[in-house]
Length: 288
Ligand code: BEZ
Ligand code: FE
View 1 (cartoon, rainbow, N blue to C red):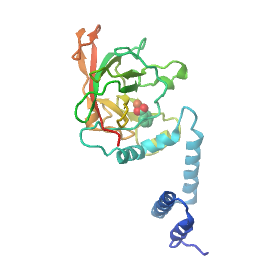
View 2: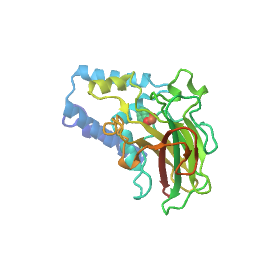
View 3: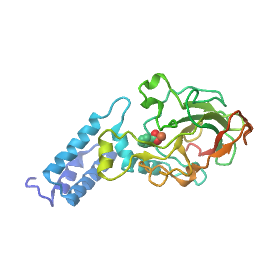
View 4: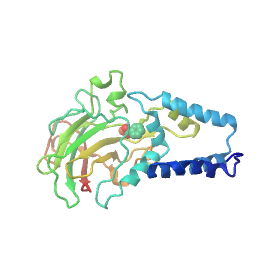
């Protein structure tokens, strides 16, 4: 077949997929061609615009390194990461809702004992984090892994600092006690801009959008026999809760920080200096 036009080229490209050996690859390729052609027909790009689009994607790839994933940022800021997350976590009602992993997760964070501080030597308002991990029936999950990480009081993650991964701060892994409880000390995190010195930052600027995420603490909670939960807990009152640049906020993940005076916390833990308390109880659905 020859002489392709605006009217028949989509069907012609799809026709070339007839020999595809893998059914899923065929299904995905066909949808990609259909939607991509429809997009181009809708926007009718000039040749300069199409060249600019190719340059943008080229720069996005060139920006990627071992510590920077610009394509994931692109997916995050276009709402695709949260769409994929929603499709893959259609859980029963009471399970804790998930949200994006983000680029600052580090697998090899230190295992610390319950009650330890993950922010030793860092300046900021003291924070005590208390919570539990339970199943859908409310039964505590003992020995669940609770990985946590968050930005400092200036909105920076440890891995964004020049010293890199040799000095990990504000991240650790804890194990829940026999009552399913975990607790640790830190500092109150701040809102922060996602890395915006690359093509994604320029895209946001061109779209008239800010690059900020509201203050939050990340969690990755896992236990044998249960689905791993990747989520954040957001701090109520933050100015960016309704305009998170990666669309990650859900009402059920927002909590209010309570003032904490020296003495015993609601969870029965020693408090030496005034600060804030963040409480969150996680519910994991079974692995199916
Ligand atoms: C984060 O919360 O760490 C994050 C998520 C998506 C993009 C950038 C940062
Ligand atoms: Fe974050």
